[in-house]
Length: 251
Image 1 (cartoon, one colour):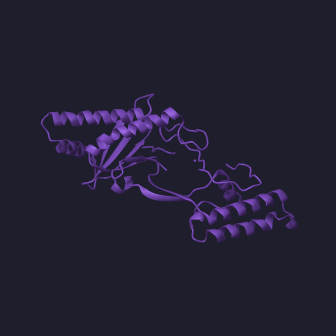
Image 2 (spheres, one colour):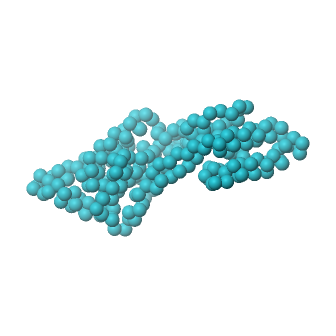
Image 3 (cartoon, helix red, strand yellow):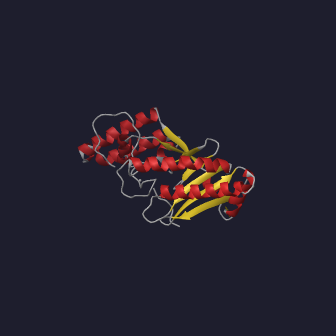
């Protein structure tokens, strides 16, 4: 199945600016709409509110299942809710076909409500609550899915402003270079390498050299007070952690 897939080189100004949260253009993480505005993760406010409401609704079902971890993803044809109970080493997959013209959040809501009604029906037939949960989880058990696939990893990445992201591109470095312990050496080495090309005394372009010098200065300032964002999340799927009872957007 096709999994949910969720990414500027603005002109550099002449002064060093303060950092803000970086922008990253990508597909809408709620409905998959492509080509949304750069820096946004949702196609609209209502789309964001709808998925957050439905995921909040799912917490009741996940608590009933004693979920340690869960993951929500969608394709063009299905919505998928994977659940790993605290007492199990195997994943139970709840899935349903998408309805034509509906958003993934609407289809997920129907999946949650249908599963909830089925659970209540079992309890109503004099089945214990724990047995009703076990029955549904066992029926949807998938031994071939690696339980580690829905355990969110802790991801750490440098937190950069748009300006700092541009500076990084000018120096032809990437974010991984800022994670290493010798980040300052890499910045200086990149500057020296490109300065040989763009320095006016070497026949280079004066404007490009000024941009290079500004980028070098900005990134050295970042190194003096580096900032990182760290969170537990999954690539391409919403991740639920039973210990915190919270959903985390996909990376």
